[in-house]
Length: 387
Image (tube, rainbow, N blue to C red; front, side, top):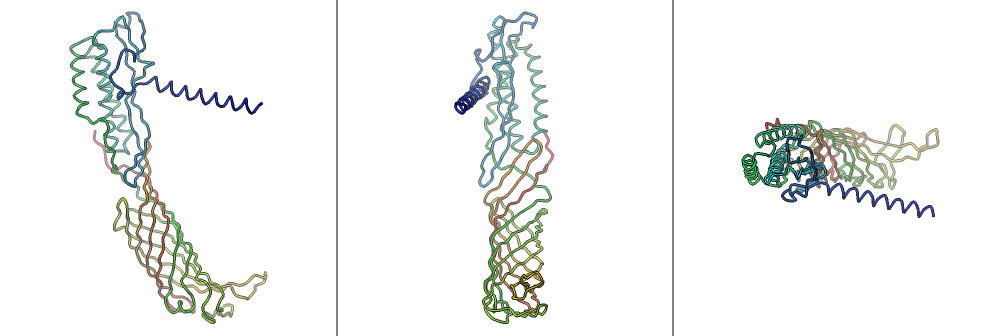
């Protein structure tokens, strides 16, 4: 019984919220809904102390976050709309003149004119939303005062007709909805990438005589500074079982690596690269690095705590190659406080490496990999807006 009562109350609450939301939306009228009518205004019979004013139009320009898809870019920004508040807008039938509705429509057209200019300016300079909004707020205040003064608050029929024509002509010259295109934006100096994926390392002689190709997990962090790419790269790989006895003798623990015992491999590298191509769908960068490679195998020698001693050989590693980043999607988000940009990529890697393994000698290897990469930047003002 209690559950049914709670469920009933919840449903009633949701229904009430839905009605309240619909009522709120019904109390507004958008400029795009058509010309104003007397029914859009609340009727009030007021005393003549208001200087025989026919009424008042209450309007607002709303800012609504929207997301547009432009190619592989998801662009979140602000969309504007001119609305009148039908609950707060009023008219006095005792003082309503034949041209009073034209006066209110002229004021509504004036707001829509500046809204379209505001929207076009925000589309061109999305990071300057606050400055642009402040500018057009002042412009609208000034234009509204001029409209009221020159029309004598709507009582001068000639001035009302002049303003009606003026704003209709301006609206006809302005597109109602600007085509949203990818805006110009400037990323912050420093960004950050994080990636993880798969790497295969194919060894050359003499390592290839005892170890097959190593497959494993590749991960890392990278910090692009403008077009320069700095990174820390790590891999953990499994080349499989050793192909021959005596491939490597560990002098430290006097142990010969045995055929059939599985090996591990890995590497840690400091990378540096440079974006020679950076387009909306692809980036290309040659990359080089320095680090350490290692090979290890579990021995049958036990230490004091009865665990097996690990036998390892390592050496200095130098590598150079190329990375191709295929940008699956990009995200650009604009807020009044700034914005952010990110890229989600599939990165294909191919490079050669030279390693000097202790006890084995120098060897070359071919490295092939693919990684899921996510990078992000803050945005900064790219230029000064002149309004």
